[in-house]
Length: 342
Ligand code: GLV
Figure 1 (cartoon, rainbow, N blue to C red):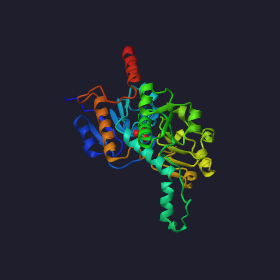
Figure 2 (cartoon, protein in one colour):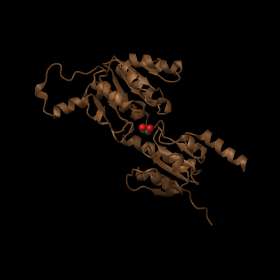
Figure 3 (cartoon, protein in one colour):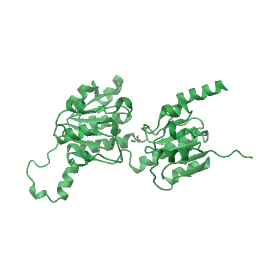
Figure 4 (cartoon, rainbow, N blue to C red):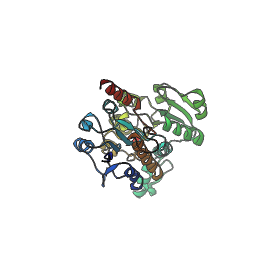
């Protein structure tokens, strides 16, 4: 009898023509409508699955995979993977993959769009115009901060941080300063025109500060009331990373009190819920986690996640070598230990 085909679960409707590639190798169970899953729903969906294609909205940890004895791979459609408990997956021998590179430039574009919208008060200007207030115009109406020639601060200098640095340095003649756990090599800094600073100095010197660092216990609320207090009152803060990096209540207080000029936020700690304190403010531009949301990039992300899942489950031309694994070493260690115990 032929071996049964591996089963995969696709958690949300993605692009049908791309997801269809899975059917050449697997038995596919795909959500037909957008769904918000409770942990028990995810556990049920994974219980008989060999692999899964999931989005950032699905949180998967030890409890969700406890009954998933066949599970070998989870392909996340996103570069960040804080929705996955990587330690729990590794300990269970489950490979996680993500979608780096394909979204770098699109996400950097959005970061720059938010920076410009916040600094030049675009959202507020539009609301003002639509409210029929133009006749109240004066020469000092809706004055913002310049972007060209100012100091761009970047917290987190990975691929997206570097793409933002290029836009700032080469497109807008900005002085670029950054903080990262490890400074970039000298040639990379020279090519970007970027200078490493201590975190405190970065906060103090940036006219516009963009957050692009991964979210973890170590970066939770790293931008808190004390950090905000170090920033210039004329500064702009942009967050395109993860909401939990910023203490949003402290941010709302700083914006309301004029201790920070403006903010642009694409990510929120409790998303899709957004704090009423932020919604009430005029000097914050809010977007619903659309960093990678161009058609071409979202398609490229799904294509990469599909490639990852096919390869991670040992099928296709790259069987066993998914393009972007997250925890390959830890999984190899778990599987090696299991083999030795047999
Ligand atoms: C988006 O936030 C991603 O991590 O891909």
